[in-house]
Image (tube, rainbow, N blue to C red; front, side):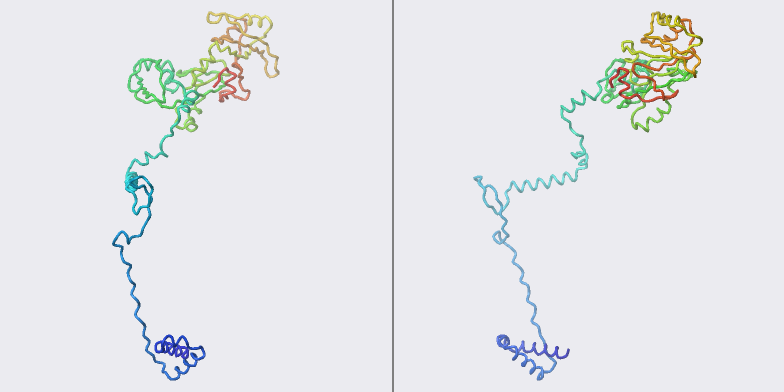
Length: 391
């Protein structure tokens, strides 16, 4: 280690004392002998000095346009020809300033989120709006019908509310039940409460009516068929959140002692079409008779009877085969008009007494065999078509 330090000292001394040209021209063997002899004659002490560091010369600052870095700009000259320029055009500078100003305004504008095109409602073409209005949007309806469909009251009670001046349309009292309104566009108030813009959807239900229930509401002394739909109405909000509950009513009626098929809906137009005699929908009943039945009874029933001042005749009368589990005879009677107590009057006019009466079919829809008493099921589009209704 000491020899290495001594060699380095001698080499430094030689480097400082011998001219550079002489030192570089020496052969390697002469240089080795020179360093060895110098190390023997010189002491280990040496004075090493270093040259001061060179100061960094600062770059001159550009003081004129010619000393600056040249950035070429291509732009039109006074004659409109494209030329190479040293500065951008005034039009370009104004555009940059305008863009920065507008960007700052958009950033500071609190309504920027509201005016954001991504949050705006979609704009549909005239053809798309026409297609929707012709096929999906319901036309304006009579005010009384809208109130009844919204579940405010029955149509007759809704007309009374309108006549009493308790209904306003767009801020004005309306006394005409025939006024055409659109719940989605018009603002309707009933007794100070606003009517929902969205009406409940159409509901079509088939009920197997038990004995002892009437087909109207409001009478507390007798059970109503609408009490059989309490669970359906109570669970409506869970199945249809935000949609008003439908106001249900029966299509036609069955007397309190008659069981079987009855249609329940909130569609007044459907109910009127199905129950009207012009629909030509037949209704089939099964009548269980007390006592024996013979051909004379069947002939008397087929000849008809006077019901509500009108002579009514059935479409067909048939004695059903005897069954082991049923001791009483049964008749299948098909009628079209369906007047009040028509089947009972036909059987009574033939000298027979009805033990039980059940309706099993309306039009092409038959009461499902698995539908228990007091139960209901929703009608499918195919079932509605059997009733002559195209939904």
